[in-house]
Length: 121
Image (cartoon, rainbow, N blue to C red):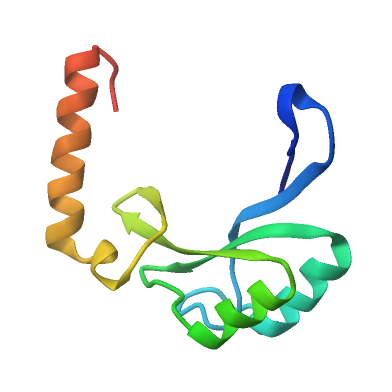
């Protein structure tokens, strides 16, 4: 969970968000609350942005996205992809974003950029 100032120069309202959260839709984690229960709780706690990050899959239930919007919550399509001993968080994702060809091409690109900058991955 993160809260950041929503106004310019750090002044004004704060934006409460969580960019890594699971629901019972997750194929790997045993979570006991639904996406709708999460939205209700998030609204009650003042969250304005959420990313439901399923393991190795993209959360894409359109009715939940519509319900979140009606509640004033921005729901970001996301996934948590396991890559050996590492985890890659993918935001603004779609189903092909977690496929092996897509990820391999992106990882090669990131490794190339890291090598050019002199930073290790």
